[in-house]
Length: 194
Image (tube, rainbow, N blue to C red; front, side, top):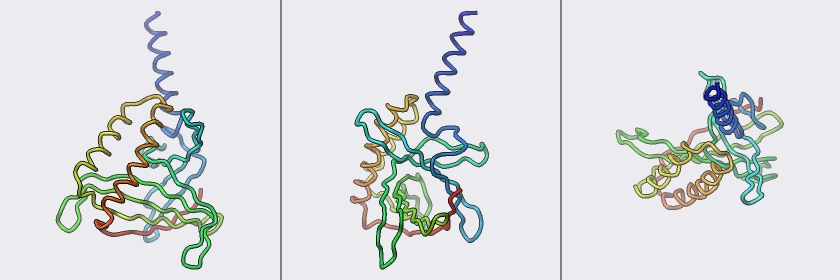
């Protein structure tokens, strides 16, 4: 009987620890459905989270897993900018975040990719998501990112998870700066706040 209670408590602890930020959540603080050529392509969400180590509140980004009906683990912190003017147009908010893609085929060659994403707010409900695909040519850059991501996948405590995620986002910036000449292409999608 004690074993059953112990296992039940352990499962409850693991489930709640894993679910605090975004994992298995059906809705986050900001949720967007994105469309490519009028076809649904993805759902993304941002969740505010306070990292107690530095008393700072962050937005974290996560993808919605359509087959499962919930969000996955966060993969980047989000840079949030208010009232930005670009090329004569004012954007109330611009959100910038990153993720990676391993073994992406482009021009008959496989690439490890850093994807920089800009989510521009056009009005209360409409947004545009611009994604820039950058080939990571320096293997040590990609290996460093992959090592941190693997460590994050094994971390069940949200505060410790953030101890990897915050520096990872800074590493994304460094990798981007090291590979500026390796931009492959960009894409644009229309998004709606839900």
